[in-house]
Amino acid sequence: MVVEGVRQLQPYQGGKPIEELERELGIRNIVKLASNENPLGASPRALEAINQQMKNIARYPDGSGFSLKSAIAGHLSVKADQVSLGNGSNEILELLARLFLQPGLNAVMSQHAFIVYPLAVTALNAEVRQTPAINFGHDLDAMLAAIDSKTRMVFIANPNNPTGTWLNHQAINAFMDRVPENVIVVIDEAYFEYVSETGFASALSLLDSYPNLVVTRTFSKAYGLAGLRVGYSVSSREIAELLNRIREPFNINSLALCAAEAALSDISFLEKSRQLNDAGMRQLERGAAERGLDFIPSIGNFICIRFPGDVNDLYRQLLCKGVIVRPIGVYGLNEHLRVSVGLEEENSKFLSAVSELMA
Ligand SMILES: *Cc1c(COP(=O)(O)O)cnc(C)c1O
Image (cartoon, rainbow, N blue to C red; front, side):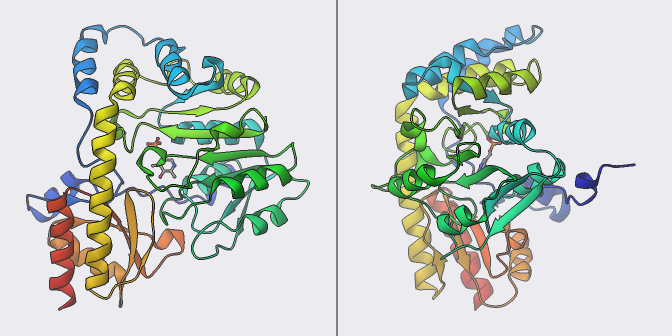
């Protein structure tokens, strides 16, 4: 009885929760470097805002998200009616797919791209068109070549998860110039706030030139609010208006709304998070190099390290030592593990565990 697209689906597998490993092994002091979360937690301003908001939780949230949308619009210098809120940016990705796809149509994406894209497309029984990666990153020429008259969407993560690879502004601009106007291009900037690479630029500045462009962002990564589920897109007014038709009436809860708004204003927390990430990334890169391990250069808050031998076995052995990382076989990467950048001592614990297991 189940619709065809859903029959083919494998459920999304997130990073293993700390409590689950505690339950399974009866161990403590677990280090989780598996879901690209902010190791500093959330901004104190966000926590304070949640405390204040608690007394109102008997009330429905503001379904229009007026205050948060206005804050985002001010922060990004766009109009509030271009902003759409989602229960995580994940929800926005799914809503966009529902707006533009149906059986007989297709969406183009790269090999090794964020796995939520094929999930969202397959669930609608539309076709996933994957193009081969180059150097683990998106090959925009191949993606252009894959577009045909049945293509309605292109998904690009910049930087991409799990590879950490990225596309510069010129490449994105040239791509947008060549994509047909009736193909919606989603540029997923979930890690934007972590990027310190000069030469990287947001696609937001292209929105005025390309009405078929949608940029998504999230409060789950650098802003440290993954547990609250809130993300957003910036698009043309027309697309925002369409998203507003199909979203749930109260898709963002009131604690998430106020915490996200407070987090947005805490520039120093964000700066501290970025600096910690830069230092932690150098620590992991050095640690990998010292152990003779290859890695994919990443500008996100995670890095894919290649290991000799069976990585699933190594993953399980790391679990036994209380270190959770992410196997990425479902991304077609069977020789790498993805490691999120943690606190200095967490990165050290991971590197020491690797040394012991490799010895
Ligand atoms: C983590 C992630 C997201 C979604 O996160 P939400 O928590 O749903 O906002 C989206 N895209 C990429 C590439 C990600 O890595």
